[in-house]
Length: 150
Image (cartoon, rainbow, N blue to C red; front, top):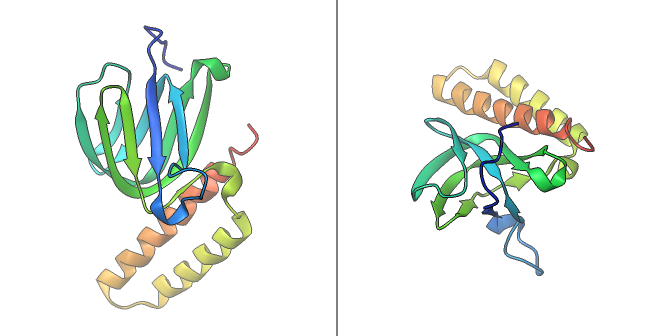
């Protein structure tokens, strides 16, 4: 875990409009010490005091570090989207974001097997590439689901 150099926090806000509830527009909202997100150009770490930046997100694991939670790292799945940092607020907008306990591993495993079957049967390169992307997204979900309760 990275050592925190100040008492400042960054406000993390994850918005997934298709997954919104009546209670809040945010899928996740919390003040944290550091966030590492998967961008299309690689991983990007966000600490308090970061200069404003926007990034396109790839499907991947959102790693959230919070010293108040016993130096624990928590994770979420973010399946693409955009991120914007300004004034110690990191806003992530994604069509789909899942906490580990929200992932139905049996359902995801079944989808992954179906995508693999379709990929094996596909003859078109673009079609195979799309199925491989779906398989990768399923694998990310299964990896993060394994962290539930840790």
